[in-house]
Image 1 (cartoon, rainbow, N blue to C red):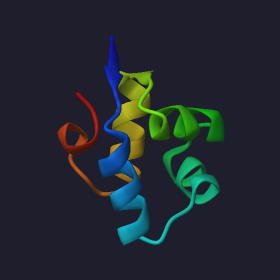
Image 2: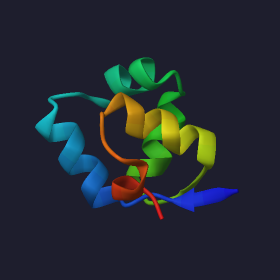
Image 3: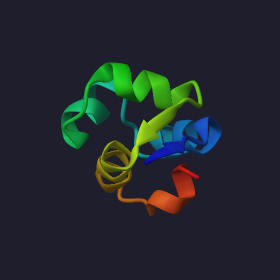
Image 4: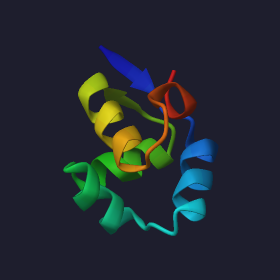
Length: 65
């Protein structure tokens, strides 16, 4: 199942944790392409959403719907 990213919240959490696209991708064990898609508000698979949220130490429901 795919979920749509809330790009504004994702950007906010990235800024608040002082983490860039490359660092987040590495920490979440996903590609930079996936992070860029999320930042554009595209849909991502649930597993990818969970990895990104875990890497930002944020509930997945705060970043994806």
